[in-house]
Image (cartoon, rainbow, N blue to C red):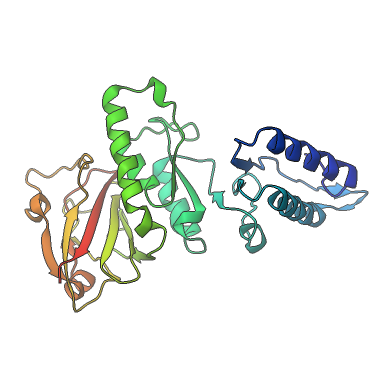
Length: 295
């Protein structure tokens, strides 16, 4: 770890990065990855973390002044560098190096209390997580990554043709929904079953929304009941249906709720108070619902 509080260290890093970006104008993105714990970090025998932080701010300001088109991403888990000052200087933050989709649901839920989805790096990782060794199918990983600054952190050259096709469908879905996901109002949904988590994004005009319902673990009851979909105009009617063109989540239902096949039209008031009946998802599965006003 370089002590950027030292002028010679600061000048060296600034000169190297500036030269790199000047000599290679095709570079449009920098990740400031801070996977070093500053344990008892000192500067000339005195505490140095505050000075290091201010130096990083100055460094980003200078780089942005010289290269305004370059995007900068800061890192959370590797240095806890997510604060209001860093958000003024960066385009997004990497919420955690743990890319396990199940872990990410919790990470993104609580990070999202402070940050909007477009600032949170959310990637589709490989089938087996490198941090937990847990295995998830592509639909669960992609549905989790959908609600953020969507990316891919997976060697897609080594995956099957079927996986490439499904991944392309999820990427196309994110691109289609991105104007809503990155400009709408985030809503969180309470559910009596702690194994069921739900959240969504509603556009400012309350004409469109997208929600995700995830089953984290095996529930106490096999039938999960209904899930509410809040945030809509109570006086309008909405068409609710699973998103198209991506595989359906795996369920333990012998017969899923009939409304899933073609969607259902319900008032905003009914969706907020009563909701829609859920299928019995297997653990670590997510159902993504698209909602559009019909009148």
